[in-house]
Image 1: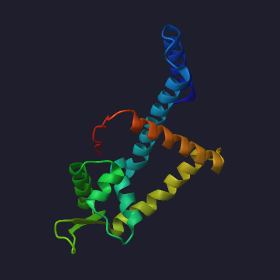
Image 2: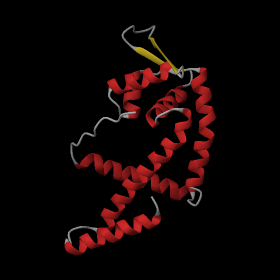
Image 3: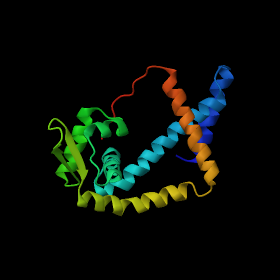
Image 4: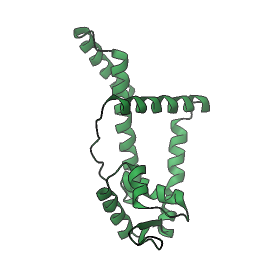
Length: 176
């Protein structure tokens, strides 16, 4: 994605709006730019994670478990955090267990429940990768003041809230 592409998209939206005045150029362009930005960020994350052999979902699962430290985490926690079905969480967990990045054992308190933990190898991988991710996000927002960044986050959360309130649309399950 480039700023030139955004200008092309805008020109196309303006042509549509000239033929259909009910189309809002500003709202439609904002929607398209947000969509394009999401795709570009995902593509960059995939490129960044490829050398580690991780998908974005697997990395987010690792980060979630890393954030728990010594505390126990359960597959249900991951379902909520990653917005995935139990079946997909099982698949992601299987991959991470197989690679030695997490462990999955039965809970000592409730034998019907699984406990997920990051392994030292998984923690080392997160510690190796997070500095470059942090550098990337810092570079991305370097021209924004903290107040501008906070306002952007607030505005994006408002858009998300409006989207949730629009309809009972249920997104397709994400896959890793």
